[in-house]
Image (cartoon, rainbow, N blue to C red; front, side, top):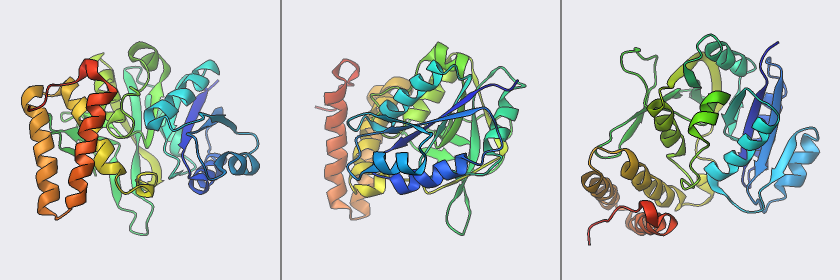
Length: 292
């Protein structure tokens, strides 16, 4: 008997994307599969539209926007309550191929040391370019991250998998915990994968698990979202994992400000500063003293 997989989608004012993703999940070749959608306080009648389009899918109403981590954690808990042996984190703006989950499980099952397995993400546009071959790497000095776009040598393992499509083994979740909900948006999957690796779990990629991805559909709804939340989350990540946080965090901030100045994006400077304040206010216990 094959293991139960619980798939988690988070929706925020994006019911059209979510319905399309649910349509793709309905024709997955893998079974047993249980799908749960967490609605993060949408104001566009998402809940009623989702239930009308897919009445058998469980929709959990968060009541407010818990962010990517908080929303996913609600769904993960529900999947674990259903006794799922794997949890498939999947962005609502994706279209997984019919064999996508089959390939993820087929990669994970023979190797119990794999804590998580990622898919190959392709742009949903006609170009079909590879966005990420499972995940990528982070420069822990300046916070610069880069996605792999082709198969990787095992001697240069990935630092992280992208949670746009990531299958996580239940024992790994039980050991390292859920996503850190202090990461409201961005960097949460990277931090989770670093935690997995710290506990001895390895990351894998199912090269035949193909997922089409819009990328940033939620972030595009609010123009300041990317600069603000990626700054706050980047600071939080580097404060935990960088080589010398007192050096690396100011370098990260300085480079972000410099890039926006050179690009003439003056308003974005304010968004970066808001992100710095978000970090300071959201978790003062872990706050890194910045330049005074």
